Image (cartoon, rainbow over all chains, first blue to last red; front, side):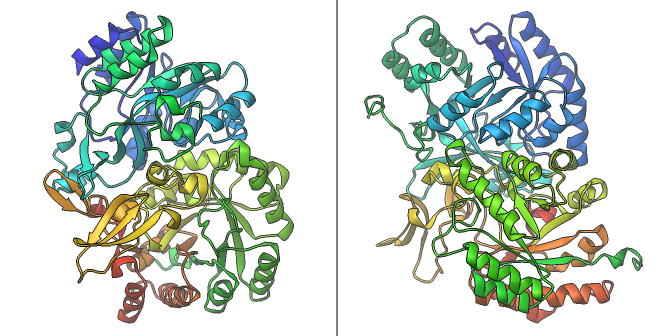
Length: 285
Length: 340
């Protein structure tokens, strides 16, 4: 775990979102460990944002969230409206599970203190373009450009269920699957990935081929959802594409070689099924 | 034991996908009926379902003459390109004097509360508020008067929320079960391009295919195999979280079985907590479903109100509810911790 963040500290990435966003039981690191990592990343020149949980149910989860939101050192990424409420008046970021689907919603949250928002996962290029036209200039827009897509959250732990274990005695089986547990159809099509109470896409979203469009739309930040392996290499490919005119076809090829099972997708960008893949030469069609 | 607290009278909120269903719900004891307009502004955007202005007016008149309230769901998430449709729907809701508007989107709630301060607002289950701080956000900003809780909380967690919520709570009692927290499930748009948030439908019928093959009847959603059935197995609608999939070496209902939520056994506990209303799912179901389910729940709520200590669901109620359940089976869902 610490090795992973050391490699991130040495990478070209500008911003690191830290913390557990899926399961409050998964206390792999304590709050102080996270803060240690945050300080190391900050010392390495990274902007650190502390991410909060997405599904907040128990009072104990709410209590942890309150303490996270009280910190005055790092900005917090709100992934539930409870965090937005607790961060009122402070600068904050909204993650992809906060439903900002239209300019009116964004405006309300800007009045609350929102400084940066992540485009919701299922929204398209066209929806983004409308938002960019309407939003205030000083509000930053972030888009997930790479990684598995977070698709759903439940009270039920699907990893525990697949091992015939109840959530209250999950034995932390999810830790055996750092990139999640693959779910396939009965035709062996790799379909979804189970990450505890979260369900992700099996396909890796990859918007490398539309980086120029994203820049034309004045997207400020490109988010990479990390994998257990190759994340520094993935960062490097995006960095070279953004800053060193690295050929997009070559970048795409390099990324394909690093992807886990399941293949890639970019359908949401085109307003289609999220799992669809539009190829480079289709994009002007 | 709870004689004082038991004065809480829980409201029965029933679904109606058309005027006959609305009338049947009213006639059989609903305290409120909820409906939607004929477009993607509501989360049951199905062909042949829902209400235009004329039918809404007739429905409201019919219900009000009989002391029943009518709520309107405008509970999907508009994007800039469709904003005008949601705005017009809110305008029409105010004009028709619905008893409450059930909404989820921050922008829609902002518009409704600013333009029509007298229009009562309920936070839809699609608003995804699972804790008191989320509820406070919607209460402080839009003066919502009630929250419909997502179907992901245990009974104890519902109680915790009820103790500190600034507004009364409505909980689901019966009907199709969403396993994922509502308003933040994108599985349907990942597969079909249309989700409850964007289009008002999950696993939309237009993407469904029933295919007879040598290995049995297959149900597909945008060509993804959701399940396949032997001749002796009843086939279910391919709601994509309720199919059989492979995880590791096992093929099973990896997310959830085709089953319906049924909390009729929990009524005394919900009553003591001060829950304001019990919601029945199923605007897409037939008037016959609405009749059966409304009758059973009316009887159950009345029995619980008269004497909650001796309350127990009658065998006949359970049989009726089973007969109209998905997969002919019911569950307490997340209310019951072991389910999780």
